[in-house]
Image (tube, rainbow, N blue to C red; front, side, top):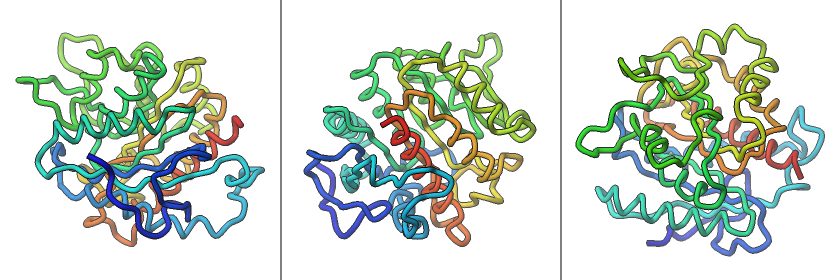
Length: 298
């Protein structure tokens, strides 16, 4: 099925449409939250992030970057993926197909969730083009729970991604974890920079650790907004106190310019719990910084 018809302007005031020729980056929303194990509501996340973005795009040049984003990156907002309610398998197939089409021709795809489960078909689409990916995963949770009866959800998608060889765990890193993520008797496959390490390490040093793990591999970056402490992002389904603040995370992302970033998503914004749009604004800001990282290599 095709995404919904676009209306108005998109993320950061970008045009909304379906013709991707002439654009370098594409924004796609996936309003899906049927795979969440916490509070539902992330289906409203994509539009909430778009609505928050006018707070950012009044600047000609975004501090502290030395260039205007539009000078290096032409951005199209493709609108939201449409799927039948309750049809998770159909959503996964449609999202993978749409993502494959959008990343063809060298375009960079930025996707807004929805719950974290949407990252699995996105990884499939990007791995089909680049081979096994280096994963940079910001989250309070490892999303590596055992898969029982072949049931997939937002808590076990990265285990399936390893099984399908979509990501190379030896060149992947999880940032901000502060919940139980290891399974007894199993070696944990990813490098983990837990929340205590994140909040006690200077951002530039933290970014250098991430870059050492990833090397020169093609990188997919997935940002679950609950990586942030709930004081800075209350609007999410599974908030966990004890995380980093928004400024620290933005400084880490700005220092990731050497990495070969080929795809990215920002997920798990649930506006119903979002006081003063804090989570939506944080998500928009994170996405904005990621687009600058991509543009900095052009």
